[in-house]
Image 1 (cartoon, rainbow, N blue to C red):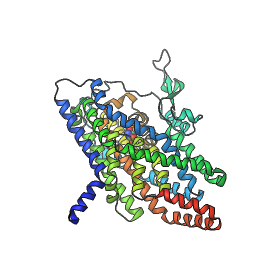
Image 2: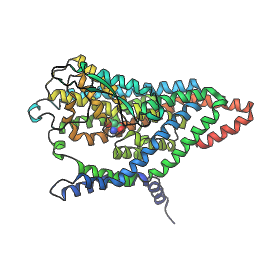
Image 3: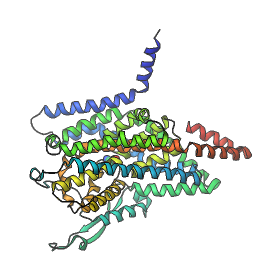
Image 4: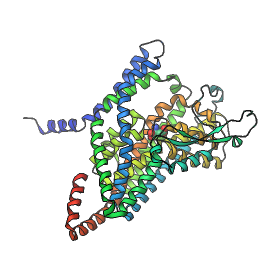
Length: 481
Ligand code: ASP
């Protein structure tokens, strides 16, 4: 007969099997990646790396296919199920949390980069841009206006495929023409306008909630869709160990220069990493403790599957289905997790905000541009906006960085100075982005317990008066469990 200790170890292994396999996937991917990289003199061809990434690519495609139906149905069903005053309270708590944590992240980033000064005295070792990045020469105002335009998509079908971006047409004889005098061309870029879909889903959820019985069939449809997407998510999660293994292996083969990480960019790399670590385990823990009177470490431990997937995919959006699933397993009210997680995955990116601030000031230090206190404040504001505007996809932060660079008067091309290490920093900042969303869901859940209970009691009272509703409440509670 097995002893109780053995049983405990066995049940612990069984409970954490998937997480352990996923961690093994990351570690194994790194090991295989380095073995393959050093097993050959020359570089691995892009085509070869693509073949190795193939299973990982399939995993990413599976996750991505879940994003739009899950995002829309989760938000509509969560908001539609709450009465308006409760939605307002939850939204207020979530938004206060997003704002506080993002500001803490940006401030921490600025303090670290100003103290460590990773870019000072390095002017000669950086030759300037060598590679032309895929960035647009637009002003901060253009980018901010695009952000607002994207909140209101004119066509919902188009919003699932494209988002609005302003591009500038350079006049034929462009020498000496100021940037603001270039012709503006409205353009659509091929990436989902998640922000627009989130805003529409919020408004739609509120409307269905207000319509009462008339809106119920549609609300039931979104509830069922959200549940169905969660079932598919549970299946897809089992592919994650293999997926992250191949994604990480291929990424290591694709790295342009490993030397840059340990060479010129090492201090910058360490500054961002230190900031992410202090924010993730310091600032966020303090905020968590202040709001809940508990320490977050046990909860973070339960999230390891989510964190490893975020690291492996470098995408908050792709990780979102797994985050919601994990929140369900942790016992968070689905109406809260389905509200806080999709919105957080779209607009709350602390890791990205911290990195944007550090990177912009690092580049300013390299270019020896003296910055006044006012410019540093402007950097913190634009870094916050840039993190809100960044999509939850790999290296989106590098694109919105243009806006922060513009604030300190630097050209967009200067992002090439940090491109060499961005693929790796992206993985760490995505992990912190996702962790922050999950902690937010737990905080809002704990803080809203009383309100949720009061709302449930009210629903029950109403149901006792009308027994047909009681059946609905029991059914809803069943699916929540
Ligand atoms: N990859 C990040 C995310 O998905 C965004 C970024 O910072 O580039 O959260």
